[in-house]
Amino acid sequence: MMPGSDFRSFADPDTEFVLDVSETPRTVDGFKPGEPTGKVICPHCGEAASAPEYIPHPENCRQSGVTSEWYERTH
Image (cartoon, rainbow, N blue to C red; front, side, top):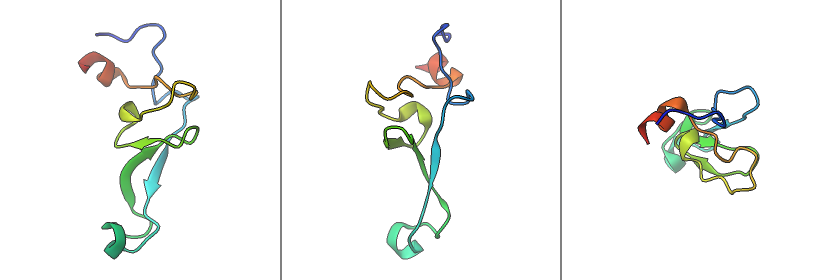
């Protein structure tokens, strides 16, 4: 499936995501302090996932439906 005219990409300038970084010692979570954990967080609703396409935004989140062209073509 090709993205439609209402397609919103996580790379668009009006979208925001935060890469989670560890704030604890490696012995706590396996990551060094300051090291990315692999989670991507939506700063508007606080939900997180391994990639922007997989974040379970609530319907009222302004970033609900944000995805990527690759995801739209393959899912």
